[in-house]
Image 1: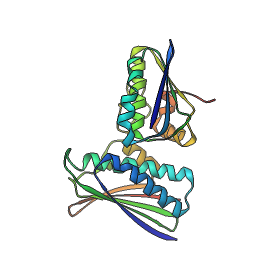
Image 2: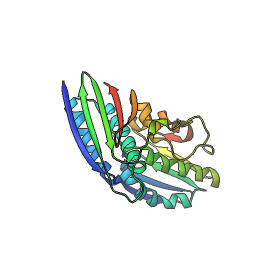
Image 3: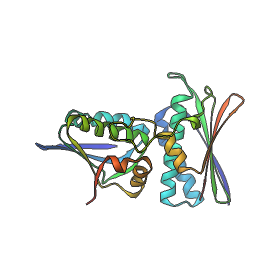
Length: 137
Length: 102
């Protein structure tokens, strides 16, 4: 089975709602179960909201593309944007052993992406940031 | 996401219905302001009908938990579904919160 679909979003956090619908539709066509669909939904929301917040300086408009593919039991998501060079994979992992007082409030987004997906890789291609996420079913 | 707050003398309960995701987080954070202001009491988050949470939601929960730790209150989370439990497990939140089922 081979399938591919594409979604284009503005760098507007509210458009994450469209992303959730897109992933659900993709998962249904690929025949993925509920639990995996929810995990993919979460990983994509985190990765995409990260791009929306960091690739474009506040107040500037931009777009990003999300390509979802499924082939030989493997999901591949490619998120690309034309913003400033930004590699989220270099972010240090959250320390989940810390106490309530010590835990920083943020920093869990990319950590979740890395935990859920099998691979997360970044490349700067020309004027674009390209973030590729894969997950075997 | 729908947020309904009920108060008693010793506690505040917020019932959260729907998705606690990035688009809804700011509004939910504002709606939970009464809990932040009463963090010396018992704060109950009824998640029976919460379907989904992302890191934006986790931030809100951790802020409440930190505020309660500072003010001497506590946070109890009621009934999370399996997917949310999984997210709590991955992020170490299972160790930070009192979670009750039933």
